[in-house]
Amino acid sequence: MPFIRRDEMPRPVRKRTIYQKPDCTFFTAEEAGKKTVQLTLDELEALRLMDEVGLGQKECALRMHVGRSTFQNILNEARKKAAGALVHGWNIALYGGQVEVSDDAELGCCRFALRTLERIGGISQREEKTMKLAVTYDPKNGEIFQHFGRTEYFKVYDLVDGKVQKAEVCSTQGQGHGALVGVLRQLGAEAVICGGIGGGAQEGLKKAGIAFYGGCSGQADQAVEDFLADKLQYQEDIQCDHHGEHHHGECHH
Image (cartoon, rainbow, N blue to C red):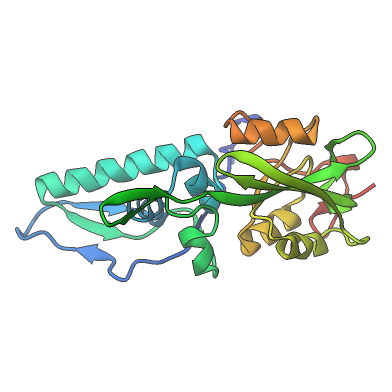
């Protein structure tokens, strides 16, 4: 067997989170013998969130736990396939894709952001887009705490229409590692910005429907401003490597 250098090995694809499986998995063309195009389940979810539910790109990417550019690529491919099938009368098969199904159907629909427009008597009324965003927090310097599993504080920001309405520092009450996911749920956080974060915590956040932005550093307040301006620098495939040790998926000193 030929030796494969580590830097030549293919990069594993992170599973995309979906919230619904299709009721029908095959659509048949009127004419027999037509080709069949495969629409993967993550491509279908991208279409559902963006084009059916009507969410923005950021909210869609948060739900599927992918970067915005990755989401847009998924969506573009889905739209191309769907358009080709409609124009040429192809069969459509819905299956496959690197996906994991969340059991929180409510989160997949409309928890992060409300519908942007609602028609009442022919008049468009805009609803507020609200969100709770948490940041692992070091109160000594106001920076992002670099160790998710050992953070003693979260700074929680109430975001309304793209602006910080309120922010408060909340203690984790000495809880750490996997228990922190429960703390975030109690705080109502829908996403978290952090530094290093291990695989166990990542899986816990995914199951809880909480998006995460790892590998961030610097002032917490500035990171939130960057998040709102779509300029936050984060690592989509962050892994915790503090001292090369792990504990239940978390790094530790």
